[in-house]
Length: 127
Image (cartoon, rainbow, N blue to C red; front, top):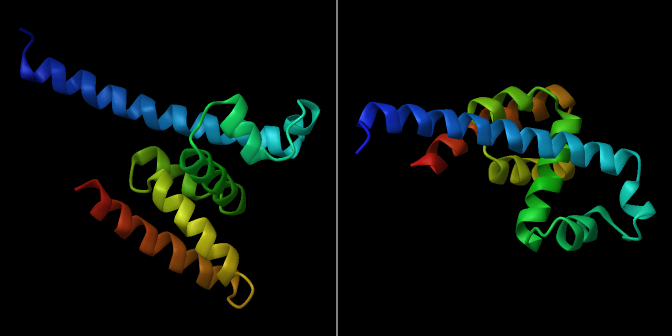
C-alpha cells in the first residue's frame, strides 16, 4: 500500500493537470468557433459539433461552450479556472448572466459583479 502523502501528492497533481486540460479544451473550442471548423465538418453549430463529434453530453457541451465564451469576453477568468476558484459550471452560469446583463451594465461593474460573485460560488460549490 502506498503512503497517504504519495497518494495525496499524485491526486493534487492530477487535479492541477485536469484544470490545465479543461483550459486547453476551452482554448481549442475558441479556435474551432473562430475559424468555423465545425461548419467545414458539416455541423450546423458548435453545440452540435461538441455533442456529436466530441461526444459530450448536451449539458457538458453547453457548459464548455459558455465557459469558452466567458474566457473570450473576460480573459482574466483563465487564472481563476486554472487555480480552481472558478469551476466550468459557475463560469458557464456567469457567461449566461453576463450576456444578459451586458446590455445594461458598464463593463467594469459587470466584471466585478461576475468575477467576485463567481469565485464565491465556486468556493461553496467545492464543498
